Length: 208
Image (tube, rainbow, N blue to C red; front, side, top):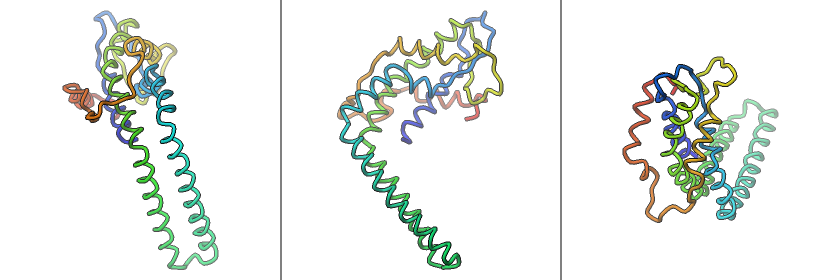
């Protein structure tokens, strides 16, 4: 999931550019992560992936249950031993074993998820280039001069959430995407020169 989170954070910076007509005076906010996740293209791709990669999803879910059961058993034993003899030096060894088990489980599940994460990244890279245009169009239609991220808003009034408007614009620009990356595709290939833009925008006060 790290790859997706990084892409979402990078895309979120695009929503802060004040690209609206000169007559615009209002301020609005939006949730870019919500927009990307709820876009028509993303939701359709997710449904397709649930079918195409069903065996991978099933394997992850099955293995997750097994690993969780093993961890639960270790924790239960640790808690029982702790009540019996809280000063037992062996408890430290048990605690370390639980932590190591957790790390190993996370690494194993992450490896199993690699094929799905790769497709998710490909899906997002096809949607994200249209986000800036969707933001600009929504701001222009609502005469918004400044757009900020939802997490920097202290108090808002009705009508200042531009998320639905941007979502509608994004759906119009990119209604669907492919869930089949080219064999030689790597994350970041399609962004090209745009990759440097989020870093510059992050200098603005947005809590990132």
